[in-house]
Length: 548
Image (cartoon, rainbow, N blue to C red; front, side, top):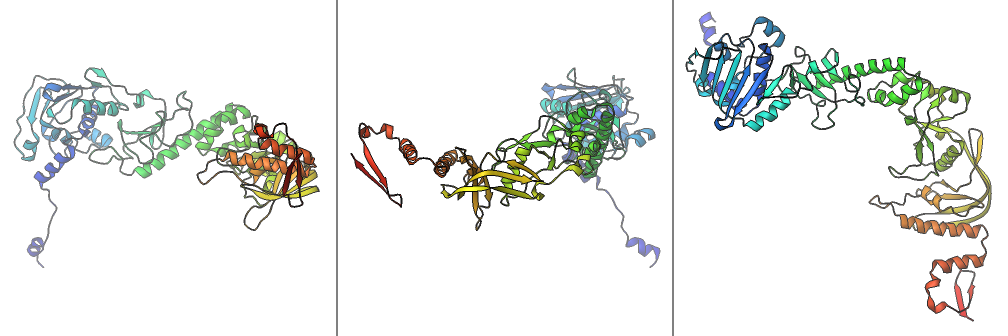
């Protein structure tokens, strides 16, 4: 095939300029991007401030900066021609399309700079009409006036307040300077591989810990970084000014980054490194007790608990003990209490304190016996958040793996049937539990065995106690299908259980009858007053009552 034939069968790319510009018009006509672009252009021009004013009567927005001005108006209205110097091109990477957001945000636009001006409408640009460059009385940097602005004053003010928050130079709105609390120049922070980072609690005196989300700015303007810039949460968060040469904003609005997932991952890693350096410095300057008290939670959130591995003190927040008779519990209704004092390595090594891993095993029949032994032995349970390389790990025992022996002599046996719970009851002499070769007598009732289908539950009650109904809560939570605690049902069962224990303990029959009559409210039965009766029970418990 000859060259002519080849060329006749070849195509090249092209641009339908009118349609392209029409498309830009739909992108920018009601977007606040125009404000961000004016801010960026003023900063790049070396302005020391940017002023925004609004004439409500004419819907006219005026933006004025005192920068270097515009040398070539043609470049201003040419797509992909930024008009900036090579140095600015290299350092800022302007896209060359941003000013079109200004062109399409109003019915007409006037641009004044260095004693010259141009005025045009978006239709002039789309139709590629000639635009005259005329003299202007404005000699300063640049003044842009949007006649018939498509953004109202309220929307402009709200957007500028957000844009100005982290911007590098002062921004004025209707004569008032807008706050810039997140501007890099107003913050103490650290330069990292991702950019400048300010961390509350490290670079200021706020009381906070590691927060895995925050504010992100690119060239001083806010950008969204998915999973790192949530639209909720507290005001005190890390502030990140990313390296714009490494993290490119997505066009045309530039309100998010091209690869937000990677950026979020990089920022999170940089934050953790800052926290690690901070915590390592605190470890060197603080006492072990103060360090774990002040920094343990911060280290946990920042995934730096390995720094605690050789600190010879355990903080109270990872230490719990059995503070009352254990029972089946719902969330928030526990019997484990947080320790009020720290535990030292010396106490553990000397044997003064026994450490156990958190005991969260299923009830295998001796669950409560083990826990009641733990209460008597005053053992300390350590949270599972303890790093594996921590000095205390080698001292941790597992309560579920220890051999357990429940001993004593049964002096009476019966069966209890309540509204929610049933099982055998044994009245015990010398009831005790032995674990790890350490024996502790029990002065409270304990449930052993399983209440599951096919299993058998037994309530062991030390002889001599009068109230043991609480042990039923080791067999049931007494919560209904709606997770509501049925207190009345529990109290009724507990009374029945205590009555049974009293009888097993040798309560005289006449005392049992008195309790039955009293509980039946006989004092309110006026027809019984000044009367006497003979009551007789047969072997099956059937009652015969005759008046005397």
